[in-house]
Image (cartoon, rainbow over all chains, first blue to last red; front, top):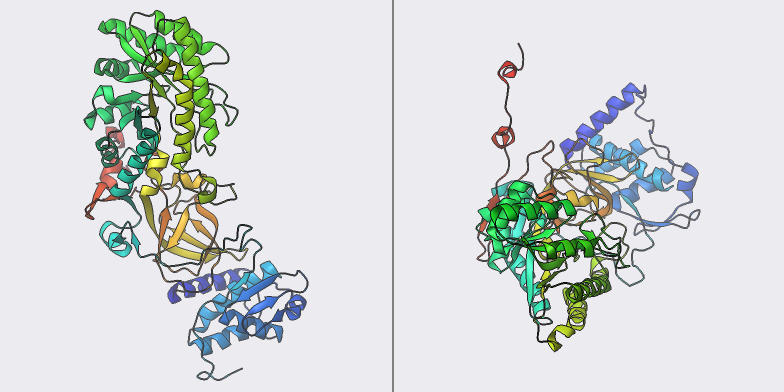
Length: 109
Length: 462
């Protein structure tokens, strides 16, 4: 991912949040079914099974980490923070990527 | 959660990918893994981009020659008396046309512009097949004087040709375009004279009775991207039956049977589930079907020591499509509200008109940066329908990534639109490996050249 481009995206995202009156950093903007998320069976290799739909998925390493944290009821912002530390990337960039990931999850769960 | 160093991770955006039914289809074909391509027609892609910009169409001289030779050989070994007419509308870039002519192909043109273009390139009139429903008196005067083979589309045209030939004191050599139902494809009844209704017999009679017209050939074109060789068998049977009836009734001898084009390329038509290599028959299969039927249906001529008619094939797509690719670059990327990855390319349907009916092959000339996911490829136009691929599995993309879109050699360099963007360079990879521009990129001077400003509108603000 191109860093500067992602930061532009996050600025745009924040602008959107402001417009909508959502300025709380801890508030997730994407609805993911938390119950469904907790039911997911996740293997160490990133294989995921959704017992409700019977659908299986693969996640990459960063996605694996985010799902692990979300399953433990940690926030997307905390996952973004963890990614920023582990990958040595700006928090704005990882937050933007986690937000996009949440959109993907919302599509499947 | 964990310390920075011991748990460090390589960055890639988090991604979840569903396992799809059909990942391996019922034929056991696995979805091809994304691999980076670095060369097209044996030329380095980044070098092409650096020298000729992006987007750029890259055409292969070797492939064009090889394709047309293959097509001709397939028919010649089975029938012998065969000519290929290069369909200008498929790709009328001058260099492409002259490659075809150097290989012995006639020019098959359908308008005054295409006729004039062929003549400008140095094609003699007698090597031009003039089709199409809109032939003006002016261009007919030239074509008749040049001795071109004119296929008549409708009765008004028949009368016009007769009047031009009479005025010139000549006898114009003409063909009749026929239409009929083969039972395989939707009949193209808007072109030519219908056989079933008797229109064609009536028109033929009119031609035969005219002292200024000589009926030399029969022509028909049954459709486009015909995937069933038996459709051509039926076409040849119907045309030959018409020929026999005609020759039995009138003082006429038909020299040519022109079956038009319509042979498919190995592009993937939208809506067809199977990949092209499983649905598109080989040229040999078409040649076998067409030539066997033709030999059978014209056997009576051999028995009476009359020459077999010449077979003309006007195939464009099957010859040119895979001889060109389009290099395009990612100029932006976004995540759509439904979660799909989207990329904006510097080439869209303005250049790739065929994207409206094909799912073109897309290869990445960039390293694979992670798992493939469902991606939409948009073009650069401010139009919602400017979509190059609506759904394709691609890994994470970056601005500047190059994509190779193929095959693009048929109908893009003619149907492309000058809309919003300039049209880019088209280059040719010579047989020698040298690369040269065969159509220069447009610029403001080109775009404004035809504008005329009335004096009172010469300034934008008063």
